[in-house]
Length: 573
Image (cartoon, rainbow, N blue to C red; front, side, top):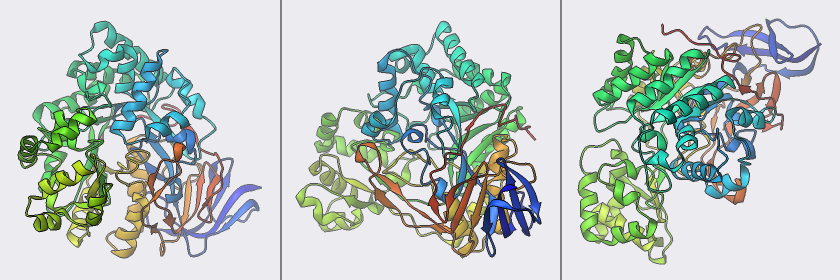
């Protein structure tokens, strides 16, 4: 007897091939038959009028800590995601040392740079492992969906160098120790190595994160370790300026791919009408790498989202040239600087120069979301352009006055922009480019700042159902098989006989996402942006229903993905 039969659905198998009417039989976690299935089964799903697809694969998340307090990895699993990759940007939470200060540093770093509430990290994560293998053991058997993890550069740098990790380059002995830790993590099955030189990545103490103190030689030598381990990859955030990529950043990204003989993916390419030339210039990094024996892939976000910003955390604004000292200063000092008209003038001047965070400094377009001082209540929901006009000030001056009265707690930003036909057409061209893979959700991070975890259902709802921009078959291929190939996932990403039964049953007439809302369900009652899915009826992970009728079942069917066992090394072709 089979475990599951999904009968009468239209199978969109992930390859991009046309859909076909077929049953899907599942036994012992695998698909045993795609076609007519007459045998009995413990569970029978009537999929008449529905579509059966592979589970979606999200290659860039930060669910490393969330996995302990929310093993279902919501809301991603509700949106049809069955495999995620984490430990990105150099920010894994393993290995740890015997010094509690190192775990505390990583906790505070995650709170600062990835927007995870510090109290939730303290209450919800045990922090009781030392090795990467010990971390994997703590998660094995407890996950609702599959998860693979990188070894993070900042984590191993902190373990080896302690407080010196954010002071200076590593010496020869320290680099050797880091390589040993990386060897240990990869031998335990870590999916690869991640690092970052991003200007936006700064720690809770006002310093750059540890990986940003590394030399090019350190990065290359660490990445060279991956060449010894099957099925590994590199995730890297290159340093960017106002131009797409500096030549040294292009050369370094290429060099780490060549040293490892592994693919490098970088995060992230945001596409809209009018920035096609900029995107194509950034993708020239892939061309340069290929010409020199490497492979570099851009992760691209398929949907638009708004952002909720503030000057209290300083995240995003610490990446604006000329703003670093103010944003990384202690809170009281920062507040005093925003009161200082001379400092304000310098900040405004710096923000007006070309840089990569221009949307965050387009002051007139920003909206005030939340205020705290009584005199600021009148500004909730108002655009800074309108506030400034009424006051006779510049938009930045108006914002500065508001945030000072709120002691920097003001929440401001932008709603998701109305998306034009041209926006979607530009995105479609990038989705189809072999130098890109759809991903970059950052699920598990920036919990009150942005929400991209629902990109599969939003993409299917808006690009396929509402706009008929591309066929469902192609969209599913881009969400499943394509990311599976980037990481060399074995026997996942397609609905094929013998492959793992990671499956979604969806209603293409209803698939989409509900509106975002704040949900206060984190440890310590902290909040996060959240949205449910529509039209995702059933989700199976390794043949077990983790979502049934659109509701979580509570099953813990996910695996910790291990390099070599669950992934192979993709070719550079």
